[in-house]
Image (cartoon, rainbow, N blue to C red; front, side, top):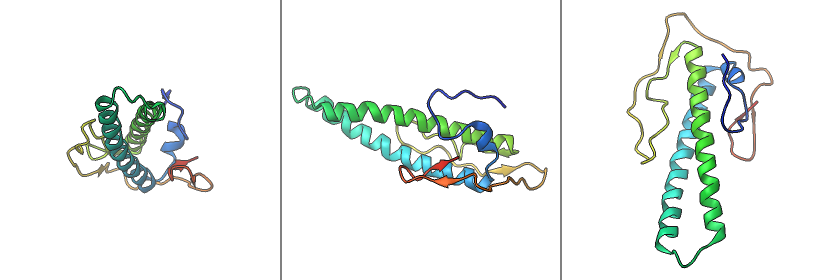
Length: 138
C-alpha cells in the first residue's frame, strides 16, 4: 500500500503494517491521550491570546502554532496506524478514530479481527522507544 504523509512521521505505513497488532493499538491509544492534552492546552492558549490582545506574547503564540502542527501530525499518525490495522484484517471501527476537535472521545466500538486467523509480524529490532515523546519509532 502506498501512502504519502503530509507531515514528517517517525515511520512509514509499510513499517507500521509490520508491527504487531497490540503495538499498533497501544500507540493509537497513546496518541489519542496526547491529542486530548494538546487540545486542552490549545484551548487554554487560545483563550489567553483572545482575552489578552494587548499583551502579545511571542512565546505563547509560537507554542500555539507549533501545537497546531503537532496535532495535525499526530492525527495523521493515528490515521496511518488505523490503515495498518485494516491491512492486517482488523476493523478498527470508531474505537481508534481520532477524537473530534472538541475533545469528546469518539464512540467506542469493539475491534473485530477477520476470521483469517492470527496475524503476526517480525518485531526484531523494529521498535525502539524515544525519549522525546515515548512513541513508536522505527
